[in-house]
Length: 45
Image 1 (cartoon, rainbow, N blue to C red):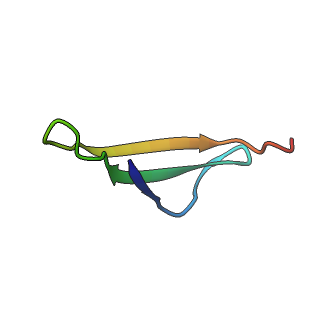
Image 2: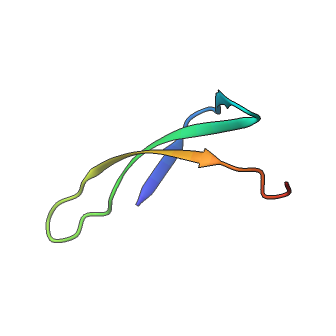
């Protein structure tokens, strides 16, 4: 799967999300578009 993320979107509380869009690889003759939003937490906190 190839994914490209967008800029950080502030959601308050020192947190942000990224929207990511991409497409799965072609298996069984087809692929799927994917849209994902991830909550990024500070791993050093």
